[in-house]
Length: 146
Image (tube, rainbow, N blue to C red; front, side):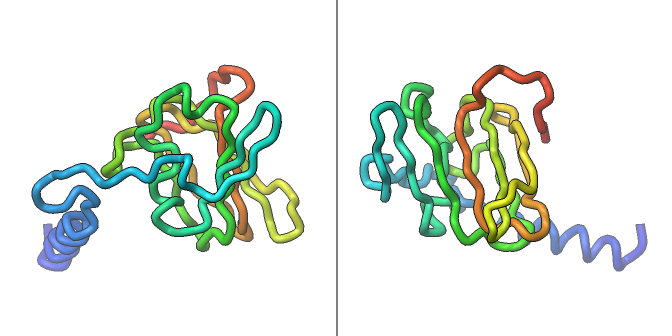
């Protein structure tokens, strides 16, 4: 391995350690209860709005299966190329498969993924500005795993 690759590898691990959401002591992040999120409630569905970075980063992480039932989460104003993950980022992993749908500014569907519980991930396609996440209607076999 040449010196450049060694420096690049070390830099990667330093950045990764600096981004550790649990901090140096490994503590859990404070979860914001869904009752405190901006939301709209209909007869059989709750729509949570992840309109702040802290809410978007938490998402369904660490939520009990019952909390996820009949709940959709909207992520407005997506940054270009954002990656969603079901892995533990400090709040706990996402315990169920999730379906995510990406929309452009005209609300055209650009991409739909099913992310596997605990290990799943999905990257927003170019032009995506809004995403909606929730439990899939059926248990599909094609899931994105890390």
